[in-house]
Amino acid sequence: MTNVRVEASKRYDILIGRGLLENSGKHVRSAAGGEKAAVITDDVVDRLYAHTVVKSLQAEGMKTSRFVISHGEKSKNAVNFIAMLNFLAENGFTRKDTVIALGGGVVGDIAGFAAATYMRGINLVQIPTTLLSAVDSSVGGKTAIDLDTGKNLAGAFYQPGLVICDYSTLDTLSGELISAGCAEIIKYGVIADSELFSMLKQPVQENYEEIIARCVSIKRDIVCEDERDEGKRNILNFGHTIGHAVELCSGYEIPHGFAVAAGMAAMARASFKLGLCTKACRDGIIDMIRLHGLPAEVKFGAEELFKAALSDKKGGGGTITIIVPREIGRSELRQVTMAELKEIIALGIAEQGGA
Ligand SMILES: NC(=O)c1ccc[n+]([C@@H]2O[C@H](COP(=O)([O-])OP(=O)(O)OC[C@H]3O[C@@H](n4cnc5c(N)ncnc54)[C@H](O)[C@@H]3O)[C@@H](O)[C@H]2O)c1
Image 1 (cartoon, protein in one colour):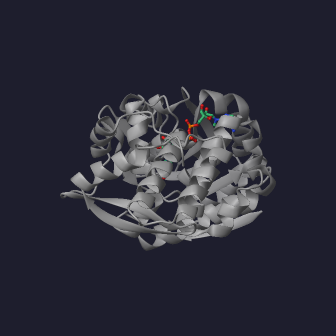
Image 2 (cartoon, protein in one colour; image 1 turned 90 degrees about the horizontal axis):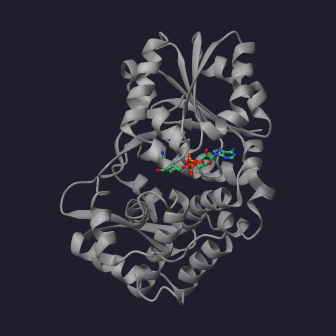
Image 3 (cartoon, protein in one colour; image 1 turned 180 degrees about the vertical axis):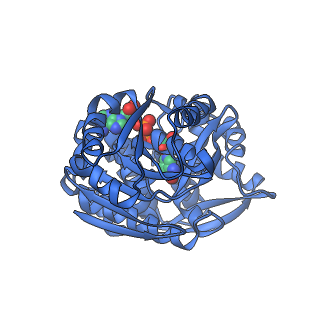
């Protein structure tokens, strides 16, 4: 088992190993505690893994209850969020008790937001079960729900007290969901770790523990420097401005990881055309995206994407921060005007067939 320690506004461990669910109760008991635990999950994960977690919690003497949402991004909404808060209240949860987010990024984000806001914050344990949530969303404390106008528009920065990443749960993921997780791993490789990027030439399953540990360690280092996303943390959004626009334009039919992949490819093309990255860097990113069965093309028009991208703008003012890949393993932040963003989107999606 690998243990990655995070020392942000809260100190917590990320436990990475095979078969950790069986002992999840012990880990929850020592890190979070309380008498009660609410396991929040989706219907797919509920059928696969909730019983193992519940059994382990009960073996530690914890009273458990389950709250199950339908799977998919559309469940990350205000109605489910309020229902979760009511569920916690009806079951007599206090601040000493624990919310367990068992599932992918959707469950992690909405259950995390419920934990952040219920009684102004109760214990939260993240148990990621998708590759994407293992390498990215379960760590770092961003929690959110989507509004009709855009993604993640209501949320909170709220660190978990523990992350238990049992990567044997990834064995039941479809090839498509593995690919979606690979998009975020490609992101980490491009922004900070060329060795990690090279590891992606092999099937990820061969190196889960090291890959997950590398990704969350990169995220940990960045989050510890800029927990509230006021500067450096923006680098984690490589591919996400266009990616979120793609998700919104598709009515959330295109999964997050696929949209991010298309967004990274567009940024690589635009950066090359602007003379900011080499051809080798652009081609390396696009080839890796394709190698993992991810889309390197965006199917929406520049105008439509630009409008959608505006809803993702959280920084205020007349500019937006974009992330430019300079070479594999190194990227930088740039402030651009909205007119420049429009131009970048247009450059990113022009001549997509070739590179
Ligand atoms: N908070 C953050 O820092 C952050 C970072 C990146 C992404 N996100 C968010 O994460 C979400 C995407 O996460 P996701 O890709 O995990 O999607 P998801 O949570 O919708 O999970 C994808 C699908 O996988 C199923 N599933 C989960 N675990 C499984 C397993 N072990 N075996 C079989 N099926 C399983 C789920 O039921 C779901 O149908 C988006 O909402 C995105 O905005 C958040």
